[in-house]
Length: 421
Image 1 (tube, rainbow, N blue to C red):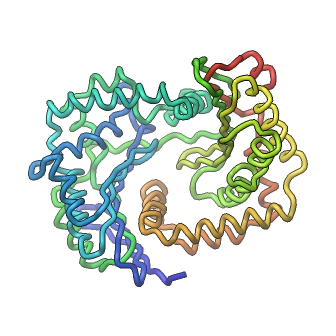
Image 2: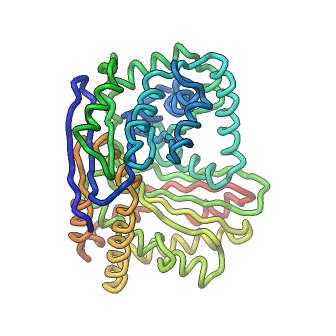
Image 3: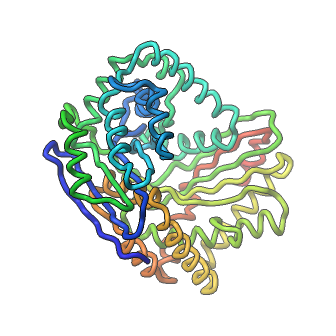
């Protein structure tokens, strides 16, 4: 593995700049991270973080929407953005010689968007259609229902897209007010990974973030959430498959148990050799898609499972998954499974280090949400430190059926499924 160097500096306006220099890389990924997402919104603001992410690409004081897209295309770069429950990120990947262009463009859209009223009206229609699309995408819908069921009235339950009702009431003034409260220097981290000169990069960042000041009303921390709500929710739809999702307790970002959970996940449902894949798909032939994955936030964590099956066999699939949960909780895993799961996790992580975007995302998420740098070496050491006993210690929590939420979408028979639970 290449020897990398980490840098950490505060600009004069308070924005934090973090870099991961990788010798031999001729490309770089840069991201401007804003510590705000759907979990930071009020009920009336539902979806505003995501809507702002859309609107900033509609034009700035010096660029039209077409120019924003063309400038990245002209250098063969990739410009994009995403909104999550706890943060928003504007990011680009370019050859290192074009890093200044990428940084200037990202700062222009993040700080100088005109938020044109006509463009806003058009984008309201676009986002409302995106919300409607979730209703027609059952694997998305089943997870939205699951989030609401598991987190209840906690802010993490709120949909990232918001609702058609909240989005309909957004105005340029509302967006500017939210950005004044949430897009301040104290809430922003700029992260770069790949081939670059850190001193030169910070000098650029000073120029392009000039005028950015601390937030006028910083976001309160998302309240901690421990154990989910035991619940079953469903939506009957006349579609070909029954989609089933489940959530049980997990671990927050930054704690050592996330590594043991990740090792167990590879064993239980995170790979083709996993128990769920081998039993549900290979042995029983019930599903094409069946998998599990942990989700970690700064304030909570959960362990998720999903499958999609013929509605007539939904009861069989859910019963088989519950059997596997009970079996793993009661008898644990084998040494052979542990070694395979740990090796797989280590290998997957190291392969991911070949991507500057993956490195930037991992570094940015930790710095933006937890406030500290987690190096690649830290993560590898965390994986290496996981023991067989560590995995067994987390099973009581991540396979806790007393705090398990289940959602189902499709032509299901809810009474049959509920009886199993």
